[in-house]
Length: 143
Image (tube, rainbow, N blue to C red; front, side):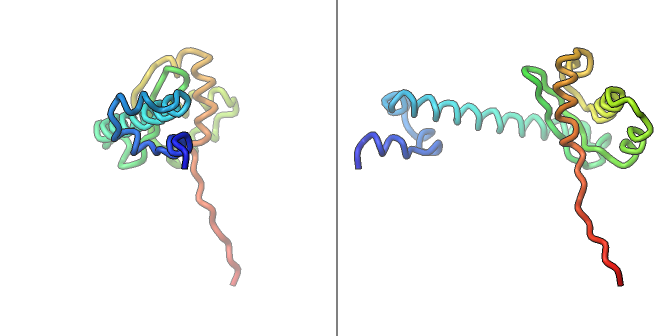
């Protein structure tokens, strides 16, 4: 097996165990790929830790429900999950933009206010809001 083939098979776990000199000795494409994976994994761990703190901070307000992180460019916000009461309130509104505003305002825990006030950020957030509405599939049986 050639050295180049061995370099291509290095996992992120192996990369993390290497010294900085060993990492930099890798082919530049592989080094940059693993470095990007490493940074993404660190960001994900940080997001999970921060989300857990926010969930704990707002636990009573969310009633033990899930917390979601929404990101639009550099703006981030944490939202609680949707409930029937909110869905009923939204169903009474005919304007889709107003529906999104009400949804965002009522799910909001904390975050960058630009997601609520700046049109470009708001529209980016609205595009993600439909992912928060989870419906379980049921079956109807006749007997």
